[in-house]
Length: 147
Image (tube, rainbow, N blue to C red; front, side, top):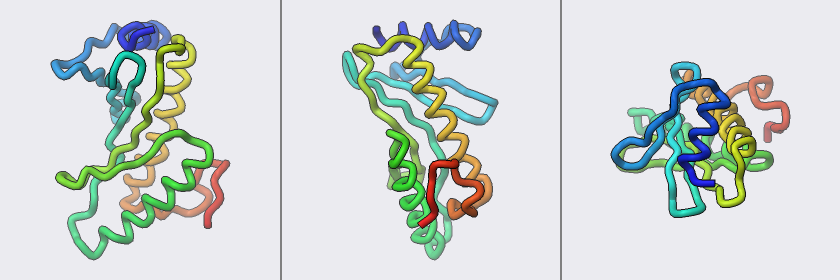
């Protein structure tokens, strides 16, 4: 299936109006009013799902500890998730992303992928909303172990 077919299938599943891509070909989807994600094609059979999860602190002394916490949590997430975190150095934005093949994917699999991504996005956003990514163990997803 193509990305547009998968997006249309997701919209039908969610019972929302079809989402057109923007001028750059990026589909922007918002869940729960504050969980914004973007889906874009990286060719005929590869897509990228991404969302901004935070921004580097302005204070330089806070940046290294913040990035260390992000890195630790990202490595913990890699045990069970296929998402990664990257830093856009020009803006200081942190992005959660996942690239995957869609050439053999159906709408159900795509919906599951988006659901899992949104759940992980929500977890990352909850960390950033508390102005720290170093959260107590109880707030980590159940399959994570604090080092």
